Length: 141
Image 1 (spheres, rainbow, N blue to C red):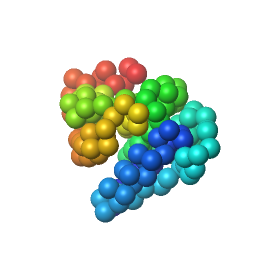
Image 2 (image 1 turned 180 degrees about the vertical axis):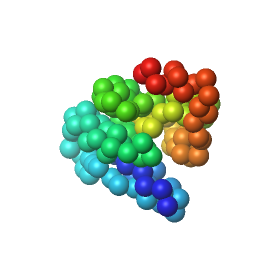
Image 3 (image 1 turned 60 degrees about the vertical axis):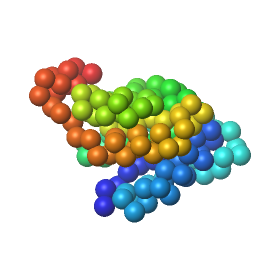
Image 4 (image 1 turned 180 degrees about the horizontal axis):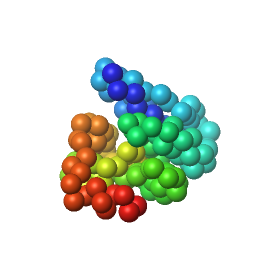
């Protein structure tokens, strides 16, 4: 069973919990917080914590959830070895893996419907990096 790191801020907490529940039979999640949707937190702290885990092994993958997905993505992409993609559709999610070898999916709980988020997570985890002409580009990131 593949281990996935997952984290959110207060705005993303409910979607994070729904993702864990939906995919608990497929993946083992290591939840890095937040654990209380009623306490406002600073999303960069949770993004940085997850990125340290994902960046420590090139097989690790992560899920970050905040209100828009943008803040988590910006914070995550400050880290070496991290390629975090804001995903909002099956197509852009698939391309983030095929062409960009994204290792973190970021989702916006206020902008993405639950079922779309579920489809994106499923596609993200199943899609393999295409390599080839894309590899040299990813190495330049």
